[in-house]
Image (cartoon, rainbow, N blue to C red; front, side, top):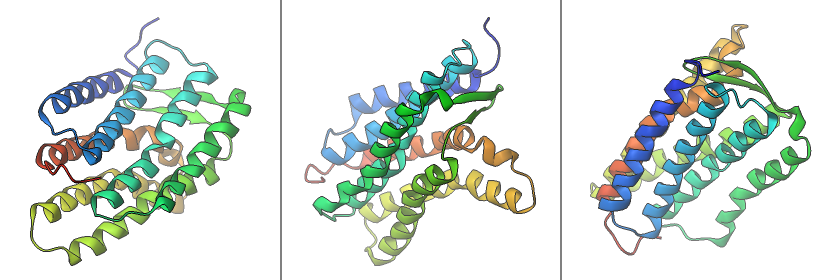
Length: 225
C-alpha cells in the first residue's frame, strides 16, 4: 500500500535528476566535472531507494544494503574530487576508497542484519551492523576535506578557482550541521537524531548537489583532472 512516507525523498530525487540532466547538457565534460556528476547521481540514487523502501514498502534487507553501499562511496569520492580539483596528484589518494569497498563486501556477508526501523515523510531509520566503525570511516573524509579546504582557500589567490573552493566548503559545512547537532544531542542523552542521521544528512545534501551544479557550470577548464 502506498503511503505518504518517503515522498520527500522522491521529491528530492526528482530535483536531483533534473539537475543532473541539465548539467550533462550544459556543463563541460572534463574529468573533475564527471566526478561531480557522479556525486549528484549517488545522492539521487539514495533518495530513490529511500522512496522505494518507505513509499512502496520494499523494506527488505537488500534494499537497505543497496542504500548503504550507495552512500558509502560518497565521502571518499568527494574527498578525491576536491583534492584533485585543488591540483594534488598522487596514486595513493585512491586508497581512500578501501574502507568503502571493505564495508560493501562485509555488509553483503551479513546482509540479513539490515533492518528498516522507521519510515516517515521526512526520513527513514535503519539498524545495521558495526554502526560506530562505519560512522568513523564515513565522517572522517568529510572532516578531513573540510579542514583541507579551509587551509587551501587561505593559500589561494582571489580567482574563480578560490571561489569554487569556497562554494564547496559552504556546502559541506551545511550538510555537516545535522551531524554536529546529533552529537550535541547525544552528549545531552538524546540519541534519536543520531539514529536517523544518514537519512537526514542526505536530505541536507541537496544543498551540496546545488553547490556541485554551480561548480560544474563554472569549472570550464579542460585540464582539470
